[in-house]
Structure formats: C-alpha cells, structure tokens
Length: 181
Image (cartoon, rainbow, N blue to C red):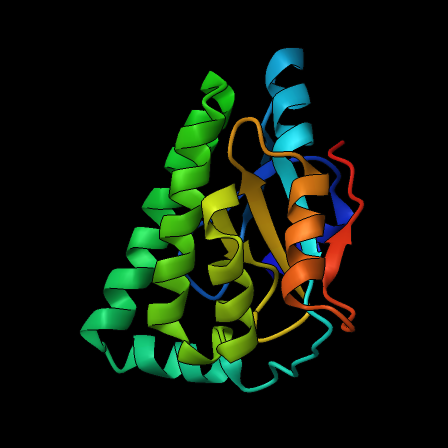
C-alpha cells in the first residue's frame, strides 16, 4: 500500500501504519527549510538503468520470510523502520549528508530482504560512480528501472552524466531530470 499512498500525495513524506489487517495509514509531510530543499534538489538524482523487472512475487516472498520468522528478514524490516525515522529527522535538521548515509543503509537492508533487488548492472552502475555518491538506493522493488542517488558535495549532475556515458556508452543508462516538490 505504501507505493499507492506515496503516489497520490505530493512531496517528501513519512508514511506509517499500525500493525494488523485493518490498516490506518498516517502520512506526515516532511517540511524542509528553503536552504535544505535547494541543496537536496541540487544533489538528488535519478538514474535510468534501461532495465525492467516484474516484482510480482516479491511481496509474497518477503511476507513469507517475515511470517516464517527468518531472523535476517525480521531484523532488516525492523531496521528499515528505524532508518526511515532517522532519515526524516536528518532531513528536517537539514543534514543532507547524514540523510544520504541512511539512504545507503536502507539499500543494504533492502538487499537482505530480497537479493533480487540488485543485479550485476545495478552493482556496476553504483560501483562506476561510487566516488561521486554520498548515498544510493533503488526505486521500487529494484532489479531494474531507476536508481536514486544523492551526490557528494561539489559533484554536479553533469559530472555523473559524463561518468555514466564514459562507462556505459551506447546504452540508455543516464541521468533523468527530476524535481522535488
């Protein structure tokens, strides 16, 4: 449900619900001061991988591992909740670098839940521009589509675009424009 809620409400938000079958969703918009919003806008970038992935079995597999009380899955799901709260906190404080580090932690936790969230190409994209990135994460279930990154201070979108074109010439891999609202 979080994808649907995220898609129908604008802006950066923190979405929660209580446990149980009857979901009571609570959306809190994360309010950034203008300086933070400008910095995040200049450093946040979407990368298109040129790949697609159907994630139809992902939820069933993750829920199955959670219900089965698999320790790594339970740990990762609980930790993702904690990291999300910290990400909101750091954004509201205006600390983009701490937010970016937490974004990367979330990425590592996501891989614990579903190894299929990454693949060789995604790993190569992240590895090829590692020195330019302060934080990284997949969009959606991963395994293709789009990646979201936070650039290091002083790195431009053009720097990232140039690196991707050098490494992945003759592909559709590249930076897509996005705007934070």
